[in-house]
Image (cartoon, rainbow, N blue to C red):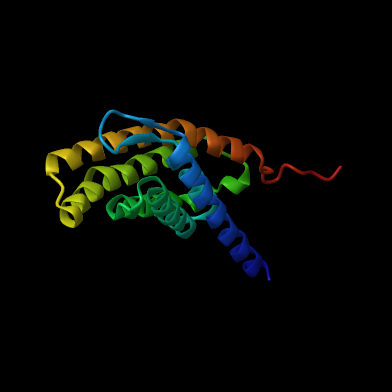
Length: 184
């Protein structure tokens, strides 16, 4: 019964997470001056949801949220970047058990691990996968897409490093620390 409840909670979290990803991507992003490349706060939220609900939920939030955001914002879906959002959400979630945010403890070691993983995940996604898929799928010029990937990747690393760490810290504070309740 507990597993069934957890599955339902995760499905609801995916739906809500995708909706918040869309809203943040649509209304809380900052233009960079590079065409079709913005500073996104949605990845900080994706990081939180991936850490709380795990890699599958993170991947689905990235996939659904980014695809719908593109469809609403541009009228079509830019699949290469949607694939990267899916990958990044999945990779963020891979450390969810190690960080164990539900324990209520978020120390320096866990923050460091989170940020190392998010930087590596985003470097793989934005510096390598997105530009290569842009070239393969859309025949985009390499110099353009690698510049876009670098700008998107660095800005996402910074926003996740700052806002994502703050969100995870705030969430951890809402959890009861293991062994914090004592019988008097």
